Length: 313
Ligand code: AMP
Ligand code: MG
Image 1 (cartoon, rainbow, N blue to C red):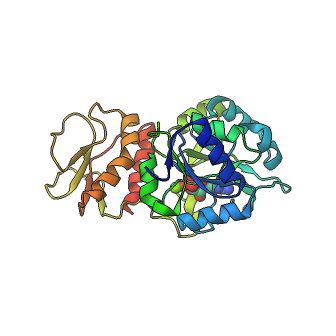
Image 2 (image 1 turned 45 degrees about the vertical axis):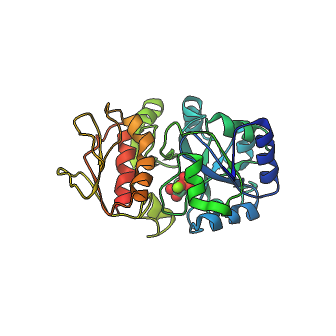
Image 3 (image 1 turned 180 degrees about the vertical axis):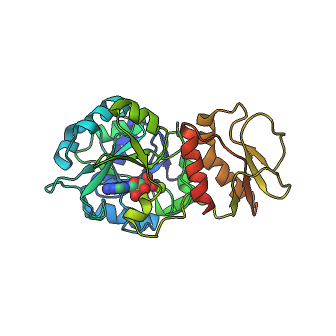
């Protein structure tokens, strides 16, 4: 397919060339696909916001290979280092204090005193980061407030010709965005993800708070709606409906044209991987309404419920 480039050393070299010129590419991470640009370049970061139609008050996550470059951009606290040792590279994003002489474009962190940083685990993006002299600003590769992409074709669906280079890395291993944890003052989860509050608590031995107001703090009243397929969604439905697309979980459901099972065997990890793909499929089939059964609120189930709630908003 045009615009989509498979994982090869030639294509990684092409990707690097585009990024060095402060242009934007689509690429895989283990969470969802991202839109990547040089985090040190105002120009590159501007292009990301424009392409996504993202409000400029909603900051981006900065992706690093390891601590080498990060040391120059942020203060590394003890708590951060403990979590880093355990969970990075992986699906955990840390909010750290930005250094005043950091080269990170202030557009990328919406002029805040903090930056969000992550060390992705996906092998393809790591090969790329390892060869760059700058970190990458990467939001999810979808139009602002839409459903995140979990394969290269989803990215193509979102941007078409507007994005000329997408690195293919197959399906995302996790399928939901990273956990975001604020490490300044109290420990606070700003966005739940594959790494749970429980796991973070186990390492830091400190109470971990939840915040469902993260978006309000950063971008007042802007981004309540998120992850939206653009169809009304009813949550915790007990009754199925022949006309609605029904999203279910577990083995007690029949196979029917309007029934979409996130995981027949009742695995929350599998359900997370299938969630966005299912929302996209339902939209393409032209359903006008979605009903979702109750999904267990444990481990990554907390993140699944969080996304569904925002999608229903
Ligand atoms: P996305 O780009 O869709 O992966 O979303 C990134 C998330 O990280 C958004 O919810 C942002 O609001 C959040 N974020 C990024 N930078 C910061 C920051 N400096 N402080 C707090 N939240 C941040
Ligand atoms: Mg996003």
